Length: 92
Length: 366
Ligand SMILES: C[S@@+](CC[C@H](N)C(=O)[O-])C[C@H]1O[C@@H](n2cnc3c(N)ncnc32)[C@H](O)[C@@H]1O
Image (cartoon, rainbow over all chains, first blue to last red; front, side, top):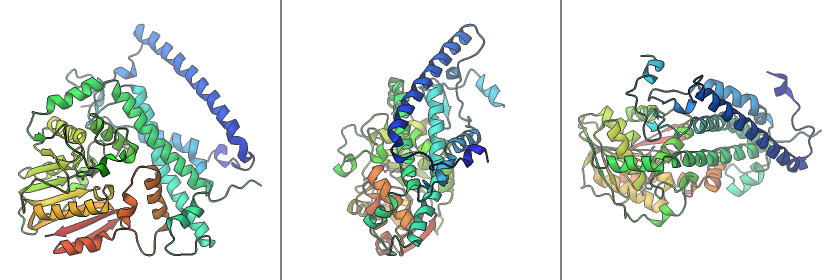
C-alpha cells in the first residue's frame, strides 16, 4: 500500500470545506483544459509532420478488447481510500 | 491473425461513426469519448465491487449497534439510518454521477454521427435474413412514457438512436463483460428445453436490442426465433444488428401484455428483466399472455430481480429503493415486494425458482 493510501483522511478538514473544494475543482478543470489544448496542438503538428497517426483514426475491429486492469488500478489508486470511510467520519 | 494485421486490413468495416466496432456496437465517434467512457465504466465497477460491500458493512454495523430494531423495517426507518452514513453517501453520489456522465457522453458522441446512425436503421429495415415489423405511430402506454428509464436521455422510445444509446450504455453497465454478447449467450445457453424435446419456436419477450434473441438463434439454428419489444428505436436497432450478424430472427414491436401471436404457439419463451420495469397489474397481464401463447408442455423462463426476503435483507432493500428514487426505476420496488412466486404457481403446472445473487430465474412449465 502506498503512503498516500495510509493518509489519515477525514481527520483534518472541517465539514464546511466543501465550498472551498468547489473552488479548487474549478481551478483544476481550468488547468485540465490547458493540458488538453496543448496536447491537441502537439498532436496536430505531429500528424502534419507524419510522425504519428491520430488515435481517432484508429478503426476498431470487432475483436477489440479494452485493457481493464490498468484502468481499474488507476481508479483504485485515486478513489480506493473512499471505501474505508465507514459509518462515521472520524474527526478527532 | 494479430490485431495489428486486422487493423491494417483495408476491408475493415469503419461503420457509421467511422471508428469501427467494439464487439457488436459502433465505436464512439472519437478516441476521447471512448477513453472517457472507459474511465466511467471503471469508476462504476469500483462503486459496485468496493463501495457496495463497504456500504453494506457500514449499515450492518449500525444495525448491530441497535440503530434499527425491526427485522423488517420500513424503507423510511432504513433511510433514516443509512442516508447519513458517509460511505453510503459517497457510494450514492458515485453511482448517480457515473450514470449521468455515461449517458451524457454517449449521446454527445453519437450525436456527431446522428445522420449516419439513423440512416443505417432505415437502410436495414427491408434487409434479411430476418424480418422487422414496427409502426412509427405506435401508441405507447402512459406508464411507459411517464419516465425515462434508468435516466437514459429520450428513454427507450423517444430518441431514434435509443437502441444505439442503450447498447453502449449497457456496455458500461455490464462493465464490458457483454461487449460480444458473452453474458447473453451464456444465459441463453442455460435455458432448459421442453421435456418432450420439441423445440421449434422460441420467443424473447421485451428483447430490447435483441442480443438474447440472436443468441437463441445461435443455440437453436433450426428453430424459428422471434423477439418482441415495445420501443420502436430498440426493435429497429435489434433488427439492424441481427442483419449485420446475419441472424435470421423475426422482430416486431408489440406490447408484452397484448401479443398478436395465436394461442399455444411457442415451445420456449424467455422474459428477461421486464417485470420489474412494469406496474404490477400490467406485469401480471404480460405473464398471462406469455402463458396463452405457450403450448402445453412448453416452458416460460423469467429472469429478473430477486423478490424481497423475510426477514428482509436491509441493505438490498435500501439499494433497490435508491434505484427507485434516483435511477428512474419507478416500478422495481413494488415488484420486489409483490410475491411473484405465488402468482406464478397459480398460473403454471410447475414452477421452479433458482436464486443466484441478485437475480432470480423462474422456470414455469405449462
Ligand atoms: C431492462 S430491458 C431488458 C432487455 C432484455 N430482455 C435483456 O434482458 O437484456 C427492459 C425492456 O423491456 C421493454 N418493455 C418495457 N415494457 C414493455 C412492454 N409492456 N412490452 C414489451 N416490452 C416492454 C423496454 O422497452 C426494454 O427494452
